[in-house]
Image 1: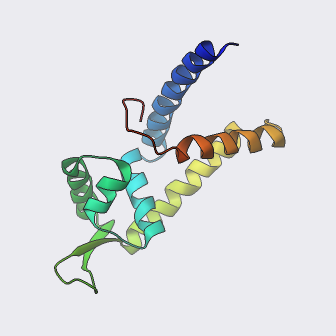
Image 2: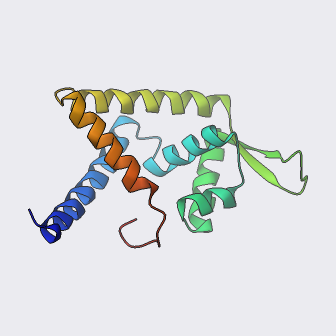
Length: 146
């Protein structure tokens, strides 16, 4: 397969992957969108952050993040706390309910991946994991593909 054909295949398969990920997220936990799941995961990893940090990290519009944050707050999955270092700043943190739901969704996703990849040889899994890490580590200019 030549490079141009490989790139076309990658684009097509990544698009199918993204569509499948959104559909499976909706099926696994309809109350938590893929975007909301991603934001909750980031809040857990970071120990809390500002909404503007979320927008910058995921290259999302502030209004998009604002809507997601409002929905997560209404669902009592996140809460705002005053930044101890700068009292003018509000940091977003997971609530206990948010941690529980994130853990449930994460386990459901892990189970789905284990089932889907159960027949893959260990070498293929390792190579796939390395390629995904390498692909996602690229920090070039944002494009329609992101």
